[in-house]
Length: 124
Image (cartoon, rainbow, N blue to C red; front, side, top):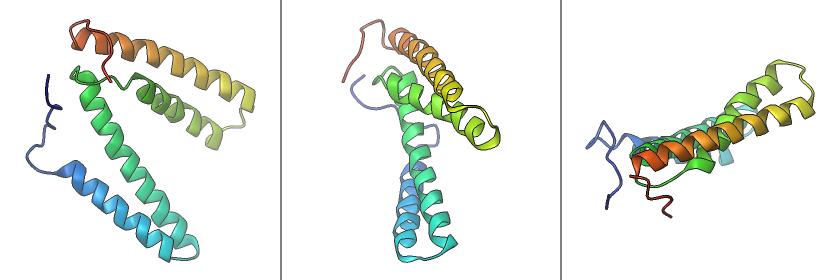
């Protein structure tokens, strides 16, 4: 595959618009003060992260480019963050859970990429 896979909503530039909105929120957050600043910055960073993750998922599962480590890290954070925020689980347990999720998703993502890319291994 020579070019990155197109999004299902192509030619509408949804990912690009989300990144633009995220940048506007981040810039506005730098000029705001008080609790509004944290909300603007937080929403901007979440939006830009989601846009990047969407692109990584699309490229990875199309066999275009491997993003196994990024996807494994995102999965580990998605599991550990709510546990940290909503429970009193000790940090050592959180570390073990995060490492376990990371390792499992890394292996699964690598295998999925190998199947999608025709078993050619990894490409930069």
